[in-house]
Each structure stands twice: as structure tokens, then as C-alpha cells.
Image (cartoon, rainbow, N blue to C red; front, side):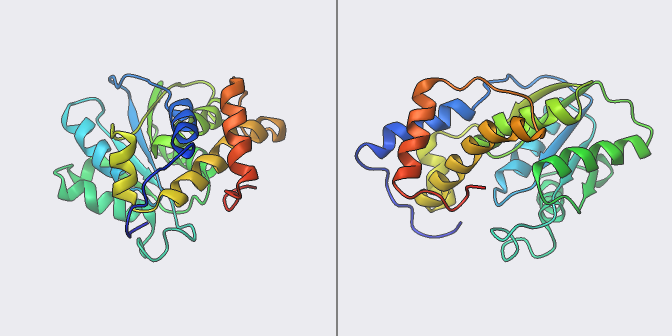
Length: 220
């Protein structure tokens, strides 16, 4: 979200780092059959997809996403369409890009992308999911449930926490998103939406402190 970045101060910084580090899967990018860029407010997803395409890690990228309340003003044509335009500006050939414009959540991102590739007759054995830094673990767990027969690695544009916060421009927004994604890692396996993920006690404690402090706008 654009605006002035508010600094992390006091005890909040330690808890933000705990959640930030938990959601980073620390997967090393490597060659895969297809890259999937998950739509969001973060244009860095398309930036990183373009960078890895130019490194020759995949022949095709699918950008997937319609709009959420946090993106409709920024990306009026839809998240995936704006990602495509940005990647083309960065030198990715249009023929190497597919756009999936309907998905409104991570599960639909995976399901609709899988259907698109099936319709093209593409055999997929490995996938690189590129997303916001704090969405990695949830995306991995969701893909593990909905596309279990592929090898999945996750990645995000490798920015330090402070640089990412400055780019988004709203620390409280990022904290709320971190808290929301942490809750989804806990709750979605119970609902059949994702596979289970380990959650260390310090991660759960940091999450609970933020909920108690009122960072609840992204809770389900």
C-alpha cells in the first residue's frame, strides 16, 4: 500500500521478524517446468518472475489473480493482467506468459492454473510458486493439498524486511497480513484446504501477541 513507511519500534520488531522468518521457506530457485506468480498487491512477484525467467529457470510463467479489496484500485484490470504487463516491460516475451484472471484466493490460484495447463496439454512435474514473502508457507501448504503430484518450491523477491516494508509503505498493513497468513497456516488444514505445517511455539506466541494487540483485520 502506498504511503509513508512507519518504522518498527519496540518489541514489535522481534515478533515481526519471528513471523517473517517462519513464512520464508528458504527454497533455493532451480529449474522447473512452470512458474506460477500468485496475484496480490505486491508487484515484486512479477519483477522476480521476470528475473528468474531471464536466468533460464523456466520456459513459461502463469500469472493468476483477479482482484481483492486491497488491489482493485491499484490494479483495475486485475492482478494477473498487471503482472503480465510488468513482466513484458521487463523483457519477458508475451508468448512465455499465460494469464489466469479469475482466481480470488490461493486455492483458486492453484486450481485454475492447474486447469489452464491441463487444457494446454502441458505435463507438469515441478512448479515454482512466486508470491509475497509472508505467503510462501501458506502457498506451499495449499499447493501440497490441491496439486500433490508436483514438486513445489516457493520463492519471493529477496528483499530484507526493512526494504520490503519501505516498498509497501505501511508497516501495520504488513503486520496484519503476516498475522492473517499465520492463522491460515493453522486453520486451513482443519478445513481441508492445505496440508499441515509445523508451528514452533515462538511463532504461535508472536502470532497471539499481535492478535491481542488488535492486528486482526486479515483474520478469517
